[in-house]
Length: 623
Image (tube, rainbow, N blue to C red; front, top):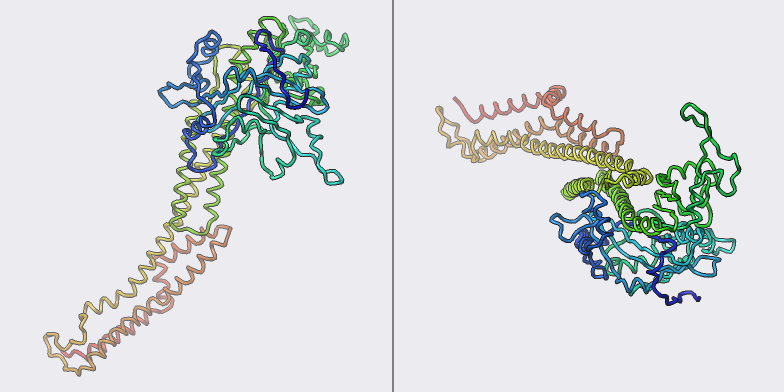
């Protein structure tokens, strides 16, 4: 079959699949413009791109009933969403393609050095958007052709890659061979055809030469142009999607339920460990899957090569990630940071019931876990961004009104972030989502595998530290503003101090001092010539200025020293601001001013002014 050619096939709904693969792409919704922050804009852009909102409870069936009541009541709103919810929904469910479009579509994976592509049929394509501004795009495909576990492993590994994990180094001729990356884990080509989406992703070097993180083309086409023009889907995990996979195989189900001595290739006495039971020493054999490379690769989604060469570590990782409740019957579940997988036999319970559970309840559980993880990472990124804004604010030298307004905006952002975090904890953060024992245990395993409990505690501490840091910086800023206001008031006091003597003189003698001869006193007034009247007025003014400026001269010197010290203290990184505060408060104190006044013998200026006043009075007035 030529690349890109799709064979028409009859429907496979009458036969069971060999494996089912659910690829989940969690992403952060980053608006390209500030005015596109609201959830309503996200919903509208998706609807403009061809998505339609769905209501899980709109259609009744026994499988939907079982899925709905599997979860606690408080978790259902977040898991299923509802158009008719009284409160604003925390999640929104979308679908894009009709059942006929899904049946006619294909996802084809071309893997390097493999003659035929993996030809997979679509079961469902959906999108979930949460109010924390994260989305999860889900592509579910069915495998009806490839029964080998190695084929299943390659479908998982090559189907989940959305961009190169790394680029190979150039050779001696400066050429970069992408085939090196594609040989290990990246598909050579992914063809995605469904409805009006027709994508051929070849992962060419030129697509990543601009240092841009570009997910596979079919993801952008699925989300729609209306969405990608307004929002940027930022991958939350890395170059991989999360995988929920069921695989039905009688051979591997029987092989993995054996103990190590019965497993193929195991010696009679291999891997035996003595243990005490009822006072007797017996031999307890390890299960076969502890040493099974295929089970490890299935757990950790390793396609061609196993990712652990240390046997002791490999056994530890397998034991940690394996849910062993039903291992005796050949049913194994596995949960890691990147996968939720299951191997069963092909009987009715495994191939029908457990496969449907993986497709419904356990898929929904993985959806919530990914939404929690994505939201926590998004909140952490927001905390880092706001912290950077505070640092930029502190580092600025301009302290005008614009800066004060900017800091108020930062405080509002912090409050908004905290409110969103509280809403997330109340409506999307669950320590338990189901009353079913098996579901409780698997949910706890998944939370431990993803480290969600530790991450939520770290996020809580980050937000608390952000509040404390913002309060500290705000107090420092307000203190600095108060000091500057005090400095301005001090300058006003200087001006007032300068003009007080003049005001006093004007109040004593009257503003029209040159009409002094018209004053009515008890004793006659000397009849002075007119020029002497003007001269005496001018003389009084000069005397007042001399007294005022004489007293203030040293005060002006201290003000100049203060301003020079203020400029230098801002360049001092070792507590200059505290020194400035102490100096300024000490300088403004009345005690220090009086000490400075007498230390510099400025009382002589006062005495000279008094003498001049007495001489003037004697010359003008006689008793």
